[in-house]
Each structure stands twice: as structure tokens, then as C-alpha cells.
Image 1 (tube, rainbow, N blue to C red):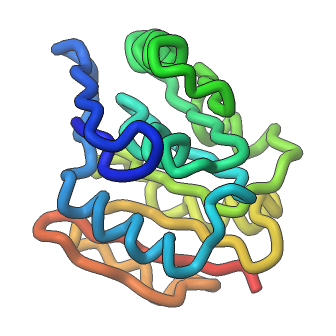
Image 2: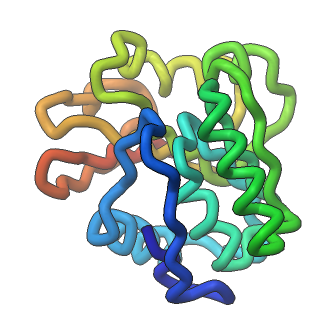
Length: 178
């Protein structure tokens, strides 16, 4: 995976083999961040990366100057790799949390400007992510939730949905707290 833009632009990060991950493609990530850059000032953002995996999306937030980035994943190997990468590249605004994402959301008292959730596509509870985020009031006013999911899953009927973008087998569904 590579960091597309910002202070760490062009850095290639090699994740160890055997992690239970499906990283967002560079094409989809680049498109996502083009959308975000047109709507947010990164230097003021507090971001949450759920089901962080290798930390691919979180590193991009850091490189683009996000104020605070929290990565959450339940897998020990993923969190170990993220912590090593934080240290190696001096992502001082980033924190990695080893925890079940739903437990984290239920206990979290912070609010975020952007929440990105890239759950395993086969996860039965994936469609409930928007409901939990909004019920727990995890978003600041005018903040966004972005859920990456299989293109055959339709989340457009859920409350707060406002847009979706397809990238092959993957889709980003956008939700806004306004």
C-alpha cells in the first residue's frame, strides 16, 4: 500500500503476510480522499478508522494533516503492525486501539468529524454500523460516516444516507450528521 498525498506522499508500507485484511484499493482510496478534500479542512479533523486492518486509511488521514486519528481493530497482528508503523513514520497524532469495533462504539464518548468503517464484507452486523454511530452520537455536527462495503449491498434506505460511490466490487456509502 502507498500513501497517496500529504507529508508522507509516496511512502510504500509493506504489511506482513497473514493479516486478515482486504485493503482499500489505491484507486478507490484516491477517489475517496478527493471527495473528502473538497469538503473538509484536514488540519482540523478528528478521524476514526473502524476495522482498521493495516491502517491504510488512517495513514492517509495522518499524512494529510488530520489533527487526531484513532484506529480500531480486534486483531492483535493488525494493531501490532499499526503501532510499529505509527512509530516508524512518526504519526504522532494517531492512536491504535485493540478492541471489538462494536464494543468500542458502545463505550466511546468522543465525537469525530469523519468515521471510516471498512468491516469484513461477510460481517452480518455491517448494515448496523450507521445506526450505532448515530445512536451513540459519535459524529460532530456536519460530520460524515463512510462505510465501505460490497457493491451488491444497498445502504441507501438508511437514515442520514446521502450518497454512494462504486469502485468495482467495493462501494462507499456516505452518511451525514446535519
